[in-house]
Image (cartoon, rainbow, N blue to C red; front, side, top):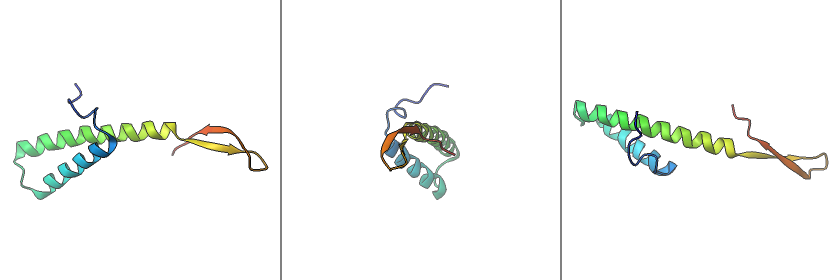
Length: 81
């Protein structure tokens, strides 16, 4: 499936705000069936983009390792749940 133009270029914050607007529109019940389907599909792509950005950020997080005296001795990759 081709990436929708624009989603990949959005910052995490922009994608999240758009996703929130989509959820509000869907929850309002004012969208036609086709519009609701289109909104849902775009929202799903936005959700995946946000999740990918979070995963990428998590992978870059490093914890500073300290020695017995509390001095930094290196870093360890984040070991997320």
